[in-house]
Length: 408
Image 1: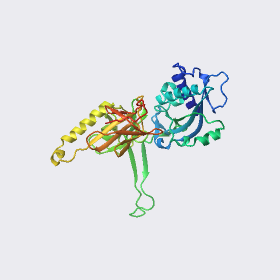
Image 2: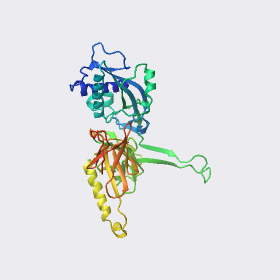
Image 3: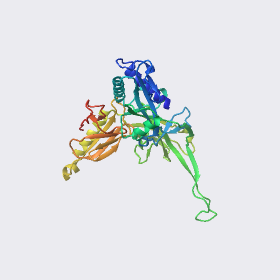
Image 4: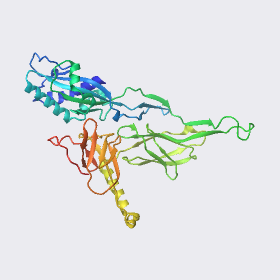
């Protein structure tokens, strides 16, 4: 994995500097991964040195869920733990005889890295493409990162002269786990209790069966991955189920009949599907359900939330009691390239929420009026975001390095 991160960074530098033209880095051979050198290049061409000196897990971005993999067999399902996030810390230096050329190249590299907070897919090595989206994040010149807190000690251990340096933290998905395949259980029979029956030793212990009435997997139609926390309800009855981290759900002991199941989760369009609960002893007739949900757009989500808030305001209880009206703030946080920003703390006033895997955040009980939205990005600190039509976009820069105020 580490060599793929190196390769992705190398491709990014080539694409942004070498292929774009106008840079002092004109050839791929001028990009070197390794220790900074005190010796100027013999060909007098600047050398860009990118040196990896620290690797550690980013605990704030740990994925505790299990992810599922569908198989051709309806009797098996694959699962594996989620990928971990690793922070790979680099120092970027330039070796040349001319200090002005050194500073120019550092400025070009700094601009290229800042422009690409999320490395575009076209630059990613294959193993990182497999972990899309947001498989490689870049944080540049962040002094609060623990790997870059003691520069004198770092340079002393390297054993070379201290040079002007850009600090770079590449946060990459790394999944060392194998997919484990397990059998899908359809029917179970078990004994209730052990020992002597309460009415005496002559009374036989009850043997009861638990009958699987309906089961299946719910997935995201676009990304083809299991969806957790989908509510599955039986239309016309009180029974409900919730999908697990694999997207799997089941119902037990429904009376044999035909039912309509309704699938709903925030951020997706609800759907209904029919199923048949078989009679006892005929679990072989169950057809496992394969349900796909379609994500709603930011505009559709904002429209639904607005309609819900208007319905609340029209409610007689609000009008008659004169209660103070509170509002909700709902949106999706995205990176500048349009990809969702998952598991990011978002603050409005003194309240904090964390975006879900789709980048969605939700605040309730806010007073009507303007509210500033601030996101806390690992390695970047607090960053004001720019909301528009239900989507809050992380700014790249205001051109002067100042914070940009955003109202929502």
